[in-house]
Length: 84
Image (tube, rainbow, N blue to C red; front, side):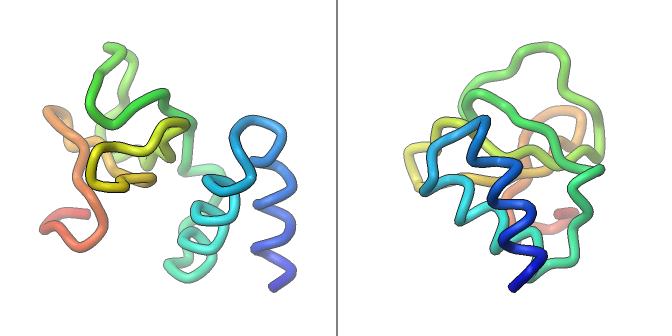
């Protein structure tokens, strides 16, 4: 619970409280270090700055509710997909 709170407090300065709670809970439940996660504006668009194997939380959820992904060099892999 302490980890969720620490991550939440950090993220809530950068994104909405709802996204911050989803992301902090997901990261804690899946043992993903905050050092491996960056903010990304939208899972349906790329910026050209994505880093392969980097995790991203999305400031704007995708059409299917996507809030977290991993860039594979071509697209965002979502939790549960092979390679995530």
